[in-house]
Length: 206
Length: 206
Image 1 (cartoon, each protein chain N blue to C red):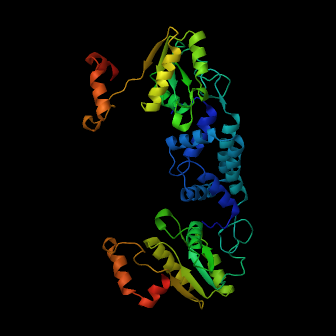
Image 2 (image 1 turned 30 degrees about the vertical axis):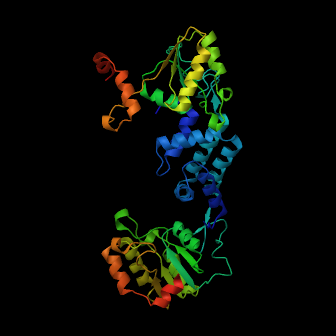
Image 3 (image 1 turned 60 degrees about the horizontal axis):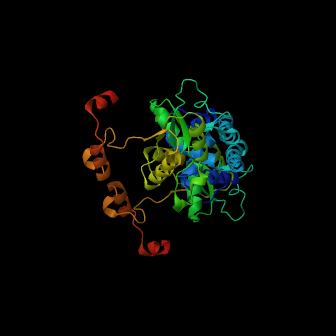
């Protein structure tokens, strides 16, 4: 691509480094910003840079945070004895958006995946064990993706936590609400039948 | 969406202002940047802000430029007597990428569109007339989109330029290379037959 301005070329190249954004989309975004007020574009650039400079990770759960301990861990209205283990901060946001969970989180920062060279030592597992050991955690909910790597991670964690008097649960797998039965994979359908629930439970969840 | 960090929320909201980027994509981009080095993210923010602060528009052709006169207008190897009229700087880039045009440009900054409230006065038409009048332009190529607005613009410009000894041309319309004949619209197909070219011309263009 030929640019008549080095400033634009530079900005396009920076945008094109982002995932899912190619050169053409980058150019479209840059030309859009070019039409905006200077102050507004400065604000955009600053918000991004400041976010990266000032962001911190919670000392307890490793979620993103504006302080040493995140707002979830420091909240007084949360059930501190229930900890939900997730892969990434994105999962924390997804669960928070449901507004159904009132415990704390623990962000692993990934999932055990030998193919990608990620072993237990790269993940926040040691701090989870410490939390369970010393902070009166009564239930650990494994909320990781239902993949081979996810199952491996659950298996590894459950072995690590076996020696402590803690209840380990996983989130329910089954047919999604609004999902068509005939398009569900066999594994999910088979599990959803063997793990069937009494009707009262279903009505209550609705 | 619930964010556990105001910094992230802010950055996501800024990204979500861009065209074609919703909250979820914005979050994905922000979480990607969060994984990058601080210096790299600062560079991203700076490149965007600096682009907007320092960008200038060429005094002659209104293309984006790093100086008072853009690199195309100030080039000595360009044919200064041929001016290609385009709607936006994106069209300049598209034509430059073909590496087939060696004249100058004139960026209108839009197209006459009464529905959107854009009349001739909002466009860079006066400066085009001046260029034709005083700077020895011999040919003006109308390279605007083949829409009603584009045709209106061409008609308006050609009336404005009628009094000067300048040749006015438009870019060729026809079946695109690689386009299937049967899927072409009737108008394009009819025009491409009536404007047919001798075979030598076709072979030469290949």
